[in-house]
Every structure is written in structure tokens, then in C-alpha cells.
Length: 441
Image (cartoon, rainbow, N blue to C red; front, side, top):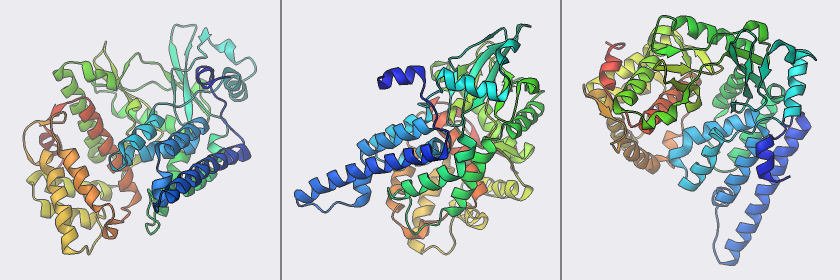
């Protein structure tokens, strides 16, 4: 069977611990073979190659992407996180390849799907539906989504967890973290254990569909009176700890709205920015996964559809107040005050040399520019992100900045970054200053 045929019919998820370990081991061996060959070629030509240069080749990145995509679970999720967080700091070819992990998840073959459904429901599970679509409408790192129709005319979206994914999280995280460290993306002197541990716990939470159902209902209640948003209705009678059933809402991928009118695009991004601020300052609970697939648009009702609450987390009053402090300084446009606030709350390391502080201040001035002006900011027609990336690249090798902020802040920062990326994709124009001022005085 060709790769194309397998992609169409689905690829079985390796569900046993040994088979997943073998998959990672085979990937490591495959990449190691490429390293040896490329290294020998460069040595023969009189060059002294660096290990990181040998590992970070398009060929090896493609091998890594394919294997993580086939394995799904924590292995794929970590790759997605790296592609989302590090895209601006990787060579374009590698960033493009790793970005495929955000959309190229493989679904289960029909036989494996039926086996899971029988295990979670019963042998005659299909008797409860008028019809059940075996071709998934979405596939991600932890599960895939099927559409089913009830006798009463209602349509459900049923998220089915891949077999073995939950049980393999700990070993996957450990093995993939070790594999990615050898690429040089993570400096050996940087202690990323707190982030890895936080990521491991989040993956366990995302694999807990009972927990996700609770947050689904919670967000549904919080936004019940807001006509701008739609949250699917939970169907407990069809749900288990590995199956999450909810109402199906007809909608379009949010990226497709890039072709909508400027007014519609501006409204969508304004709503997402306001929702993020409400999560941080009003709701004190945030859905922290910035994947674009978690947002869709219902053209008929002109509402934003919110999906996937597995990465939701509560936000304490202290953390909320800390972000209020740093955002308040950003509104004034004073980079020094913003620097001091970021240092106080742990986003930046303390006691940096004066030269490094000066470089960071330059980046902060760029970062707070859209926040400091009480006017619409054109996400689609500015070079602030590029300038920040270029200045940031100059600091990548600076050991003074090898600093891991508090883990709970990392996930909030990822949410901010995801909303910024989406706003840029939609080329929206939004008054961020006014939006923040509503919540920060």
C-alpha cells in the first residue's frame, strides 16, 4: 500500500508501549544514519560540521514530522508546540515542515475505530444512531472527530481518543524531549524540566475527556448570554472518559475567513482579543491552546464557534494581577516600566548585564507599540514581528537570557502569541489599547 493510500484509509495508531518506543527508536536511528552520512561528506570536503547543523536538515525534519504524525499522542503534540513556539527562530524550510504537524494528523483506520467504539460503548453501539460517518471530520494529536446523526434529527460531533495515547504520555514526553534536545533547539545548560513537567501534566489533562467536558460546560455557561459566541452542547449519555460527545455546529475554519470583508475580519479578531482578556481578568479560566483549529466561524449566525477545551486551566488572582500590572505599563508606552514589571513577575531573568538590558528594552519598545497607541493597529501591514524576530535572533546565543519563566505564564504567553498570529493571518485592524484599557486601569 502506498503512503497516499494509507493517508486516505488512515494509519493505525501504535497503542502498545513497546511499539511506540520502537517507533521513536527507529526514528532516532534513521536520523542518526543521515547525520553520519552528511557528516562524512562534509569531513571529506575539509569542513568541520556542527552536530546541530547535521541534525537540523530538511531531510531529518521531514523524517521527524512523519513519524510524530503517525504516532499521534504526546509525541505529535510536542512537535506541534515546538513548531508554534519556535517557528520564527528556525530556518524557513524547517519551520514549514514542522508546521505540517498542526494539520497533518492521520486518522485511525475504520477497523481500529470500530474496536475503540465497541470497547467504550457496546457491541451494538451503532443501534443508537440513525447514521454514523466513519470518515472523520477532524483529526488531531490525541483524538479524531466523527459526525453522527440521531433519530430525532440532531447531529453530534463525537471526539474519539486514540487507543494507548493516554497510557503513553509519560514515556512519549521523556523520549521525545531527549530526542529534541540532541537537535540543539534546547541549550544543554537550560533547565527546561519545569516546562516539560507542566507540558506532561497538560497532556494528561487534555486526554481526560471527563475533565474537558466540565470545562466545555463551564465555558458554555460563561458565554450563554453572549450572542457573539457559540459553544457546543455536551451530550453526557454518549460520553465516556475516552469519548466526548457534543452538538455539531456547521461552521468554517477560521483561516478561511481571510477572504471575508475587512469589517468581518476586524470583528472576529476584536472578539478573540476581548475573549482572551475576559478569560484572564474576568473569568479567571483560560483555554490555553492557540491552535487555529479551535476557532471556527458560523457564517449563518455570524458567531465565533469555540472548540476543544482540553487545555483549559484556572488562573489565580495573583497571576491575573501580575498580567494586569505589565499590561498597565504597556499602555503608557514606557519600555523601562514594562521591563521592570516583566522582571518582577518572572517573565525576564533578574540581574542582566546593562548591554543585555538595553537590547531587551529595544525589543520591548517594539512589543508595546501596538498597545500604547489609542488607535487601530494594522496586523496585516506592519513589520513589528519581523523586527522583533531579527533583534531576538541576535540574542539567541546570549546565555544571560536562557531563562524559563513560571510554567503557568508560558501557556498564557502561547495563547497571546497564537491570537497575534491569527490576527496577522486575517490581516485585521484592531484598537488593542482600548481593548486592554477596558480591563486594566
